[in-house]
Image 1 (tube, rainbow, N blue to C red):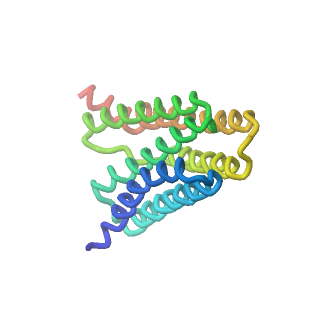
Image 2: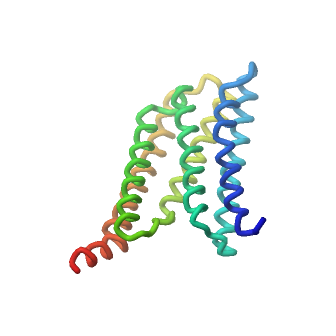
Image 3: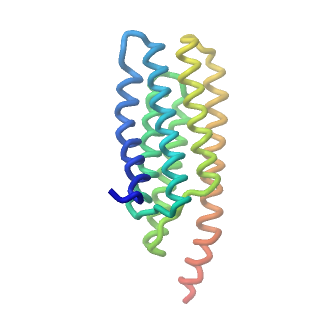
Length: 193
């Protein structure tokens, strides 16, 4: 096995953690224990995300497969967590809707850029910031729910509003930097030619 594949292997492990997280989240007689174990799986997934990104950048172990696997694993884990929290009434459904709208918007944007420029848009600081906030909010909600099963609804609303605000910020930055910024200018020049 070539060392260059280590980030890809970590992304595959993270993909496999998605169904495991969902299963553990809703399993077990001891609800608090299930939630804590789900939080551990979720934090391990976040850790693999940090490590595979670090290794890929530091040693230039960037592959075409990795450019697909890494964001796919991230988005599936985030989607699974969002849906679990909505089902469990820990996250308002409108926050989940904002998250899925953002992902659809970014997918369409990525496809347009790939079609026009034959290149993939890599994650930027605002995307990483949104991911970090997403992980933090999910962890807080899961752990708080494990420790205090009857959590005041205003906590869910405030954390949901913070998360939705960060997601909207990421969408706006993605649009401005991608379509109005570097890629937008390049596409405009190409259209003019």
